[in-house]
Length: 151
Image (cartoon, rainbow, N blue to C red):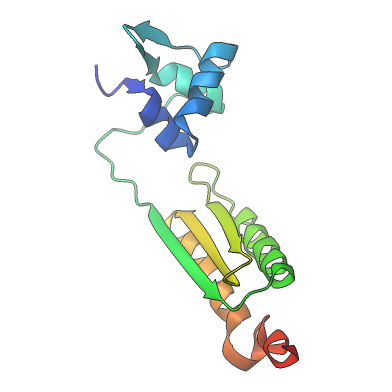
């Protein structure tokens, strides 16, 4: 039974959302849930209905590989961070496997001139994005090469 029912935190983790967002979906009626005491429980079928996925026919014992990567790029001003973020998001959106979407988030620290890129997804798709980043940021030929000389 525990395989077929999830907590708000488990659903949030699976969808890459904050638990408050999941609770908001429940309160708004977008996600069906059962309240047990002070906690909600969400059935797998209701989660599948929210995400638009057909009910899972894959056995629970099949392992799924997901990679989490945090890339830090130093010496990046706001304009370069915007360009780099757009490039990475475009590269992530070319992944054609809807069952294993690639999730990317970028953060720029203006004061430290530092950018962090968080990538979550399958190993091959993540490697493709990391190769793209490496090619774009490669030494004298990279995206930021001209800016270092202008400074």
